[in-house]
Image (cartoon, rainbow over all chains, first blue to last red; front, side, top):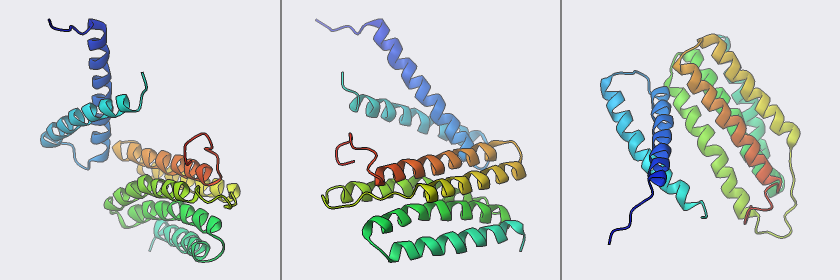
Length: 64
Length: 150
């Protein structure tokens, strides 16, 4: 028997990850000196990793 | 030498010397406040030097300082909070003066640089510097009693 996650919870999680990713990617674009393709790729990857870590950290300090 | 470097020299010489004097003399409560204000003197000076010498790399140093300075002060506040006899002193006049200095430097550099990504970065540094300074000062004054060890 498999436990199914509610679609609403999945949507919320994806939305939060997306919000973190956008914020972190924008921060990366602001802080680098020259914007080119390589920087965009590296920035998007780092922002994706950071979004995962940020959500894990946010959940770790939220009691529920 | 231009006006930016002169201003940076004045900020670093005046503020840095005053902070050094405060850190090396007096009771611990005053020393830790002076240590906290060191960030507020050195970070604007680094921003002014970056503009004066045309070296954007100094801005990254200022960013790191604005980020790590208040964190260091919070560690001191946490360590000193265990002493029952510690007097909770605060220097709100100096704190707001340092905040005004940081705001003035950031606004001047934003006007000089014009709009762009560099301006967003400067504004982020300003928010980190002033916000971190105010939070650290409040922690030193015992403002976060609800926080364990605050």
